[in-house]
Image 1: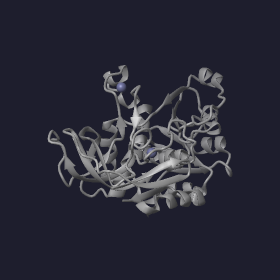
Image 2: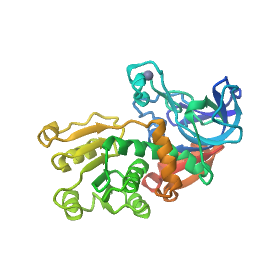
Image 3: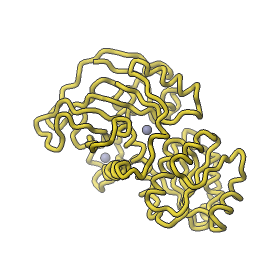
Image 4: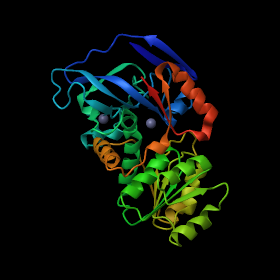
Length: 339
Ligand SMILES: [Zn+2]
Ligand SMILES: [Zn+2]
């Protein structure tokens, strides 16, 4: 079978390897769709702090079960599945407490372990999650980013009836805003520098969209949210400017959930965190229940994914997908590879 390897930054090669053979607790998946996300793009340019070349990418994917080990009970041949790409030790303090998603030895399939950019991949039964009828392979490949958003919301606590500000209208920011609405937030505002991404956010039903290049954010926020501004702020960019925006905009006693991945080390006004009694809350990946909730939200049609699906490339055109992303910059959201 063929696999695509990111051999070094900006260089994807195809190589022929043996088809994997399942052991007792594993399923073999014929990969159908891979989604490319922001961290893949950072890794492609050699700029991701935790991903090194050479790597077979692909951590957002869906496929069809074509073989299973003899101890597998919960999944069957021809089941359509997505995969929670977390390899954990099961032994460390965090794993023992059920916080395996922040395991000390965490490896992510497609980031620090071989990913789905190949015709077949085998995974432990516990990582595969069955896709219900009516969820397409494209949607299946988007369960992962939706689960990132679901987990970020679970870190925030109860948003029902509250006001939520999301900084960054990329895929994760958009989905965080949509999940906040789906969970009953009273009002949700989202910011970006790209009118295109903000237009998509409107198509997805987000209440307020703000281009911070054109509008003064603090006054807009007061106008649309009132003088108590936002109860929760989600930082979904990972840059000094946006995390500082979050801290500066936060009213007293509000929560900031940090979802963006930072490659630089920003200077922060921690004095405001203390004085305003802010809570800075990190959010990493998801747990299995976030996958289940993500799929339920998708099934209930409370989340609109179609506006986020930009384009699909064939497996052989994998390198072209990255060229397209580079060329299109802020005119592109989710790109899929069809295998
Ligand atoms: Zn991702
Ligand atoms: Zn562990």
